[in-house]
Image (cartoon, rainbow, N blue to C red; front, side, top):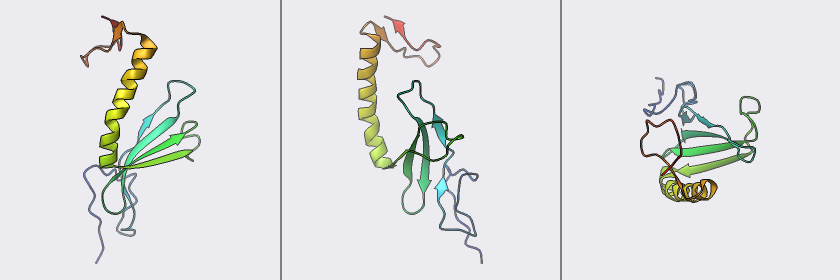
Length: 121
């Protein structure tokens, strides 16, 4: 009898390593690649992984596009609770940094339909 793994709804079968031949593999979501906007930032690849227990949010940092060099320079693994809690201070820090960078006369539009990300109030 084959030990067929049950895949979570978010599992991408092309990324997943849990197979009938290898039931101890890890379920993996489709990766999201965030490209840097300047030379100071890193390429980030964000995925969900689940080998045992609960899923973990994995963030890998790359100096260049991972298609060119697949070896991450940094790896951060967060529980879903840690990721949820971290989202709040990250948003606050981004708002603080954005206010300093663009000045107090600039605000972000509330509509998702706007093509301009900043406009003068």
